[in-house]
Length: 493
Image 1: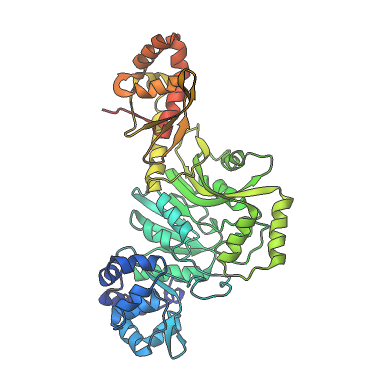
Image 2 (image 1 turned 45 degrees about the vertical axis):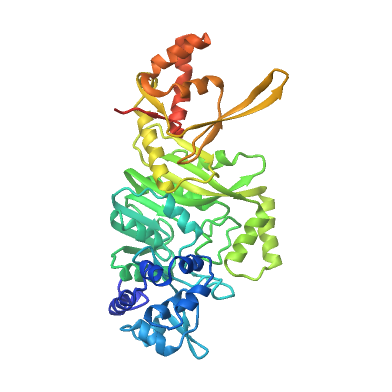
């Protein structure tokens, strides 16, 4: 994009960067200036300590008050804080605006990480009233979810579909040699272009709807926080509304994925999906990937009932609740027998195999971050399992995952405690837990890495009076599941 597609000219961006760095307006600089308690309080929108610490209105103090604490500051203080960028340039670009007898922030200029900045529109909390139709989001909860879930292995090419302010692209730049980002909104691309330039980065920025701008091209990694809100297809805000009816945008991205990925490439995106009365939501979502030839792992992190869902998104855009519009939205849910809406993460990979693995499951427990490492590990385990058929599993040695726990539920009876239920639980990583029977418990308990699985099963067969061949045949899928879940690990040395 050329200089006319940024909020500032290239020279103006350089002057702004000089102002921010020389004043120390970075994550590290602000933390050092305010100290841990005030810095932590700001994350909760409690600015009292920060305002007390910046009453002298030096350059850094003024920037903190202006862009973080949402204060109106004297023009003379802002002039000094932004120099060498002029206030006239800042006003023209919308960075600040006149208000009362001073200046206040016009956009969200957020120090991010240690030495990055992200430019976005001010949140609804900072400016009461409906959001702009092309409102550009900053770093929100959904953004953080995708950031944490992304596989962070080095790649040549990466694509951010629906980049918004460019936060995902910013992180992609740390492990991709070339970054492409798209958005339907020209306004969003201006923010993203300015974010890239301010951070000294060079992205290819393309305008268009979802995958249209990159038709025919392939990437090693694709990420997307798309406009996934479920409803009748009405479009009022481009950051949330795709114009597709229902949850079709998630299915559309799944269908496009095979044409976007290089061999071994990964695509990850956030999605909403409907829970329809009388249907299995998992089967519905699994259908998105039929015929794609891709490995797919979908985890559902949250579920909301229709009323809570509509209230969430009406509030999100700062609208005054409109009973008629809310009723129409809820009527659409009723007409389509939608009893809930799920939210989660879709991870796809072009493994190049003819037998793609598709898993759709609930994962609502608290996960040990970063989620992206667990996604990468899941795909790695699929590769390992593909390379080892039943005979390969039987020849291999396994050990139980570190810290694996057994939880029992028992009932007191006439003869003492009787175990009703035994649950295998991983206290780390994805923190899976599931009920197991005594034979699986014995199998996991004996997985100490010393014996090949075949020999371990022979001992179990003798102890349980079972034919060794029958046990070995039954154990193959069980062990594969335990490996996929991470309950047991193959010994590689």
